[in-house]
Length: 433
Image (cartoon, rainbow, N blue to C red):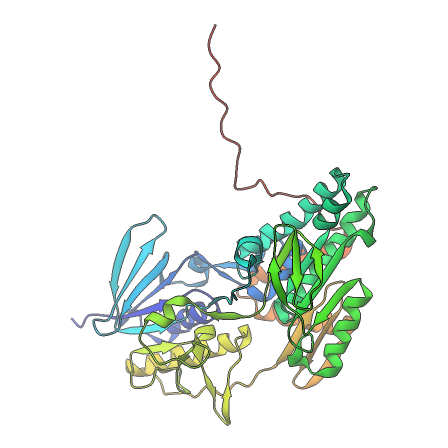
């Protein structure tokens, strides 16, 4: 009896999860075993992370349990620590701390990205990133806590710091995040008689000359006008020079009181990518061909944020690190991997993108769909419709849709749940009489 081929997928994001899902259809169970390793047992739908941070969507509804989405893939929760390409082995550490090794015949690297940090004094100590669900939940609880602390303080300097918020990075994540959190705070502050909306200061900063530069001048300017109209300060051509516990200093010299700093200024491939010994581009991404295969090998593939993927028919152009591209790379990758095991025909990756959509909260969106600009209520509706269609499983689509309906009909919940996950210790036993 011929042993089954071992297909190993590293990462359970868009690229990894959809690759495994496609492989389940392309490879017979009798011929191939599929294993996926991921630090969590879920896939995070990252485009909706800003709405989860603001409480518009229940955080559990923006994750998809991998064991429910993947019917016959073996899911292993753990962190990959090493990959030996010559011996075709992978070492990972389980959630319980045990080290395990697994052999593979075909490998798909879909480890995703991490926040790209710069050597700015105080940044690592006092700022928070925005890549994970834990960070999103922390941010929501943190900003609401600042209202409580500001309301309880009689010190004007402390109040200014508690009510100062800085988001660095005017791309999709940063722009949507500042729009969602500012809308949350604007409504929540009404419940605090001693605080005024004008006491709260929101700043969106970026070294780029535009907000959302991928949208082009007209739509970028529309986004700026919407945010400024809500009271958000837009500081372009500016970034952080230094970060303190309750202040920041910008590169233009201004010092601002702020106890909340969120860093969304770019991403970089997972650090493990640099240790694999594979060819990478100037951004540290694995160089692959139009079949998503690593040059010179038919047993290693890469997708998503870790891969520099050329687009067929667009010479010199590589796919941007977006969810829509990762999803389609996964399908092409799975089909071409199946070809190396004797199933199907090879395919080229030729997807140039459907468009760009950004939700600015308050039923306002901007974007381009197949080259056509959309904005306002129509832009918001198109954005929501796209996300519902792209969300895996009907269960999650229904839950997200209901969250939007509830958010439209009722006030936002402003309960601060920062102590969840950190229960109080049990009381000491009382001495008996």
